[in-house]
Amino acid sequence: MMSVFSDENNKKYFKYIFVVSFLYAILVQMFIWKQFKTISVTLIFIGLIFTMVTLGVFYLYLKHQEGIIENAEEQINMYLEGNSNIQIDSEREGTIYRLFNSINQMILILDARAKSETKEKKFLRDTISDISHQLKTPLAALNIYNELIFNEVDKDYPIKDLCKASDHELNRMNTLVQNLLKLVRFDAGVIVLEKSKENVYEMIKDLELHFIYRAKSEKKYLQVCGDKKIKLICDRDWLLEAINNIVKNAFDHTKSGDIVKIEWKQFSSILQIKITDNGLGIHEDDLYHIFKRFYRSRHLKETQGIGLGLPLAKSIIEAHGGTIEVFSELGYGTTFLLNFRNPTKL
Image (cartoon, rainbow, N blue to C red; front, side):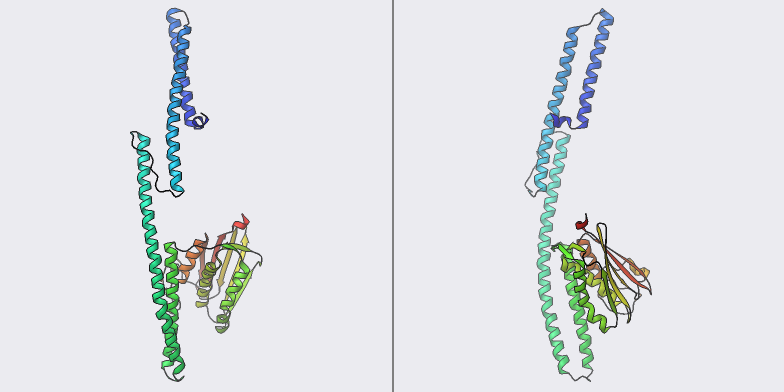
């Protein structure tokens, strides 16, 4: 009974019925008094019985409706828990059964879409695997052949330069294939992030080791700065992949003597990683497009990069529930801000 009265609308309806019945009984008594100068106890009793019967019938109707809705809710919850073989009774006439019929139709459509998406993901996953194996093998062979030619040819012979250029392009092609496959896997939703609590300082130090040789050879500087105790729940390998792509982009667009800096700070429940450089900067026309795949700036003459590093970084960061922003001034450098909600601080 209490479940019926837990609905505020039901309470109002019961009050309206009671008030209307009470007023009707009073009006009847007033009419009798005016006509016969007496009060009918019998009519009062009949009025009370009529009111109680009306309220009782209305209560039973609401109880019946509540049972129908509870059954439908149970069926919907079963569907949400993964049981797709549910069906809400919608064979009868009435507004509520038309609603149930619409829900059944929606469930059928959602189920069909889910099955279709599952098939598409499986097909895409298998296709990605096939492409990966088919492309990796010839690329590896070409690299080996190129190295053999490079070692055999006289240093002064012009083909040596061609081999260097070929090796560079093979490396770019390999990077392109790897990043493209990773992006497609993210799009297909086949990547499951294996998150754990990681020390940010240790992650960035590993990243620093990866770029230390390049920084020395190009006479650039890589600086890291942040609290050694801060931790973040993330997939270490994938997040390092994202930061690596951003740092690589910074090195690609800086010149000798420039500085690339990685900082991280904790702000309440937000962890922020900032990557800055004092290099070439990004033209304002390009800022809106830098996370688009294969985007090439018309303001740059150099050919470094393949236009997939930053889109992949963005996909990885957003898969972690984070955001990425970029600020830049042409000729003065660029700043990337990575913000992550850190549950360890909530």
